[in-house]
Image (cartoon, rainbow, N blue to C red; front, side, top):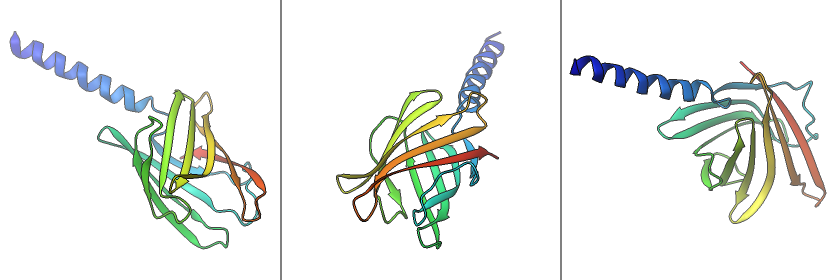
Length: 154
């Protein structure tokens, strides 16, 4: 009887953990839908974004191109708690903070030192198949710019 009870408790716990990750819209591979996106010419863009669960955190691997069209790669591991976590491989930022507002809405900021280099929001479609990243930043001449990157789940 004790073995059966322990087995049922363990099975229940594993199913709860699996269900919580399965319901997370972030997890998976996201490919930029260039025809739906509105990115200014000469601005870097991430064309592929992959989120995986890593312990109690998330790992985000981003590949894309810089403003001149050269390949880029950067990585971020952190939680969606609004705190800064280090970014590796991004010359424009050394930290990123993402805060979950609700299951479909997040806000984020990238920083270089203590200064924000861009802020933005992430919104997932109701069916979880589309991710829209809206960013606000300032270009080299001081002009404020907004970019919209639409990603399709792969």
